Image (tube, rainbow, N blue to C red; front, side, top):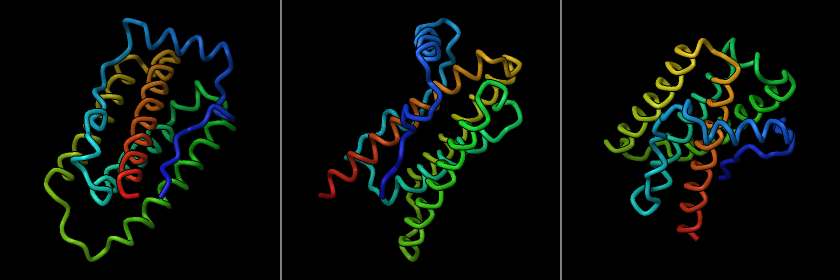
Length: 164
């Protein structure tokens, strides 16, 4: 299974946008959302445990970027392309989960991880609300989600590498 991270191609990041994202990463106003999977060590999690967590992450990103305010700061075509990619990712993850049907109950650490992902997105939603869904707040969130998706893709790559 391949967990796709967004690519620069078609993501709408022009040099101007890249410079604004650079400013966001270095700005005082950037929220500290504490992405829960950043500290996950591939040696302490199995791929079977990671897939439901990655599915929850993808679902939450899709919900976030399907919300009313997200289109205000992103070109509609790019947003649609991004959301279509997320739908495809969810479909791939669901297929992986179907292959696991009949396996044991999810371990408690997996349930904790699912809750942590939901809390992470709750913090993002609260941040957007506190900032009145401003364009700047959406840029901060977009940069944060990019980081989260990249981190998740790296985790899955490490898990795949260990299986080989």
